[in-house]
Length: 256
Image 1 (cartoon, rainbow, N blue to C red):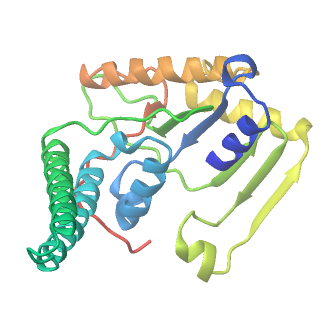
Image 2 (image 1 turned 180 degrees about the vertical axis):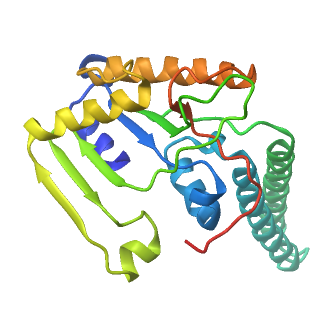
């Protein structure tokens, strides 16, 4: 998706003039749906600038990456110290000292990043030319005062430009894509695809976010998820089934 966006921008698409590409995602945000593959879920969300929606896994994955980066820098520093030229070559010694100082500065910067990652909030990141909404579903008839459950998303459905539809059994993971036997169907028929998209979104949004214009739908979805966030915090009934994706589990799993 990101490659397609960049390709279009390079070909002359101006997000300000022609509009961005919109990506709407509805998936699971509970252990039943995410639990076996939290790392791959993080990788996908991070690639879309949405690592903030899986914050604990994101922090741990980034901590590991920063720790490894620091280890490699320390190794380079030790090597630079061990290979320090003798006093007979002042120029080479000065260059080596400069190299060591640069490595020490890089290590200090990584140490600060490790500290910031531990203490800070995982931010969302904007991607030029791409607007992303990642959501999940709750029972819309949940009474006020009750904890919101979840609607398990099992279907693997993708709709592109109200024309292309693919529906099947393959998950976006290594097992489904490379190992298991899976069956998907696809077609290109706007007379079927657009009504399908609008009917499905009508269900998700309580009739409020199935607009023909996806920019209007994106705005409506954003308003719905913001309202539901406030209503969930206030222990009120859902405004609609659609809620913003948020997985706060801490376990890191790779068994999907």
